[in-house]
Length: 203
Image (cartoon, rainbow, N blue to C red; front, side, top):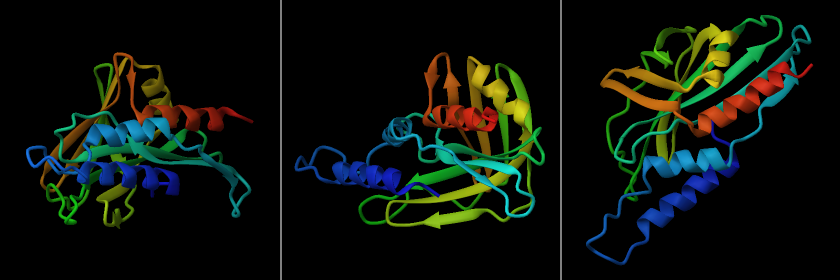
């Protein structure tokens, strides 16, 4: 789920894309790149708490945007969850979303997430579904699905140390990709996950 500040920022971008007096200029909402830039600028802080079950430290980060072309109809994002009771394990929260135009119509059909994998400096890592039911958020601005994928904390360490890391998400209607980092260009997801890792490493 997006933070209220991020949702407000996206709403402003949406309205900016709709207010246009020139009939020759597209009146579609702001592009996917604008969403990624908003995420990068407003990367939220991770939530650090203690489990009520065993008092273990937990850290979570809501999904933030990967970098994609403005022409892409479906957008990807990454978040994460970690629990000190299982310090080597990590859940990556994979997100796919599509914006709505001012009539409330989505640019393309989006029905869920069936799989995901990473390519980190040429190493392909398949992510395993946690078995949870995908979470659907559907509002006037966008439609988005998120789902948890099990991996190791070392996978995140590889992403943060890589020159090039891409996420591929499988959906019932095809695949969509986005760059977490690519030759120095860091996405909102990268910046957020960097904050997440720092919180995990803090005693």
